[in-house]
Length: 195
Image 1 (cartoon, rainbow, N blue to C red):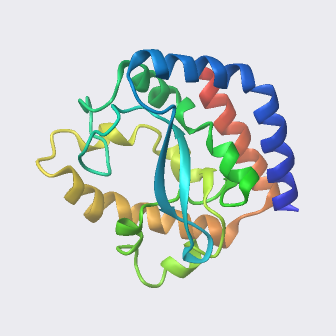
Image 2 (image 1 turned 90 degrees about the horizontal axis):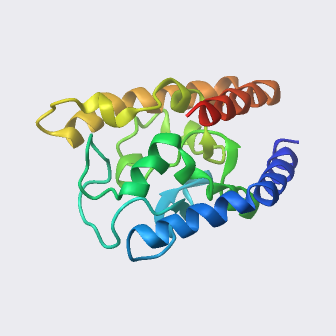
């Protein structure tokens, strides 16, 4: 039932939001040279690797950490707006249709960070498809601001945020219901609309 709901909502959303996709694609193209979409390898269901879709919010070819902190110079002008409103995540509806993601589920991580999840939580988290949104995402919407003036943002992410996220993801998997997923989707949509 969850997969059927994912496919129906993703297909309808892509059709309805196609004008929004077109406007964002044009804005990304005019703002800086490079592809419209950003693709990055993430870990999905049962540990399978897939390439996630996002609207590109950084300069093409920009190198650096897998996390973004504050006023990251790699982020473009349009990219800042897309990230603040979470509109850069919209293309993940494509991943939902393809079956590599779900509308609601633990956020997909890069292999480097999945390897650092606690051993007892990793199989639990990877037993479901990763999602576009989840309770942890709603709780911690502006993660980049949490780093503050931390001297080593990645060390802070690995030692503080990553374990917290892994526990929250596992808690979601163990208690998830279809009704709960609808509530998460509703709250996510409200926040995106509210900006």
